[in-house]
Length: 490
Image 1 (cartoon, helix red, strand yellow):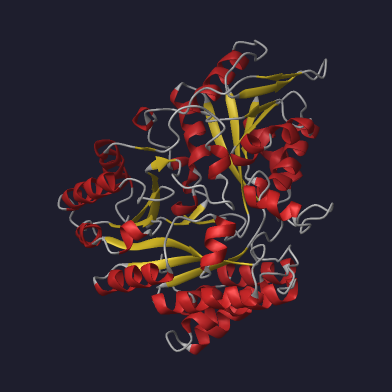
Image 2: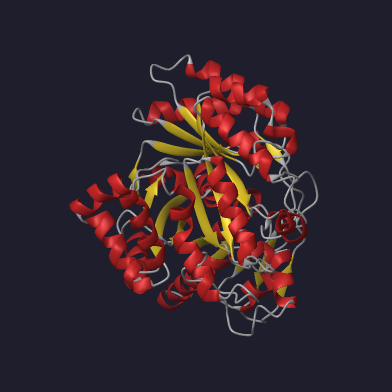
């Protein structure tokens, strides 16, 4: 059976190559596409953006490929575009079967199924469910009684809600994702990502993990074996000889320090087999247990970790503890860890939020001061967005910060959608635009900081953002300036 797989990109590089690097590849959809190909289905990928002519693109895709089914995926902010794509598919050929999965359908399947644009909604991990679904469709059988799937009977209007099965216990049982299907959509092939595990031990209120952990029974936090990870790395090196960096994707590698230390040693030994060793990056939640762990830092250095992403989120202890429910750490812990990592040659990149419910300007000033003291190689600043299904979305609604109007999914995390007492929307936008300037003033060239202010300011205006993106990625002068002004550090 021929199956189309659709992924949507915001903040894309160009219409023809919307993904800057393989680090942008989504693993959930990749695993679904790969298992379908493994059992013999003909699978083709289509990547769309908010500027794609969906009707024309999908009509051409359907006419040439003739798929019997489309697989979609969406987080909350991707859903408006994916809904448009699904509507276009049904208008072109209503007989094409449509199924959607991803974080948003798991968190809010009722809204998805009520749209009447999808024949099936995947409400849990999808690899086993999609194989059963495709098998039934290929045999001409109406899909039914599949765990992790809801079905709409368009004839009767009835909805079949099946229970979720337990989380997949053994991630080694999954195939290595098919990276070839993504290659034509990607600009830079020198950096890839690899899925190291699933789940998170923490319950941060702004993140969907605390809700996703409740969607099925069984162990939510899981990691792949070292041998399985190294086997995929070996395949990647053979397929892409120019590969230089690999981001090891997991919510946090600090969840199991014994595992992390063993992985570092395995990566160190693997690099000894390569003519040019790979460098690595990872996510790490810096807790009191980790912040002064010299053994961990030394193991990371031996493994050739070049950078680590750390969630500062807020420099206010009150915001972290009472509102975000972050793991236990003090600003001093982050400062010590970051500077010690820098001393041994590991760059630390921070994630920072602004506009968090109950946050004041004084709270955000603490964030800036902490980030500046940490001397990061990069600081990714985002405006808080209340994702439906999360505890902080519920709190925002209870506080009256969310009205009846739909949240502005376009330009999400770059536009202030909450107007806080004492920290109004316009000031949140101003602090967002100025954050990197304040953090890196005197540490980075002035022209780079001024350019970052301009870019963040323009990011709140879709038309100007699109003009800037076109200049940076389609114009040779823009590409050259981008490499000078905003060199890639992570």
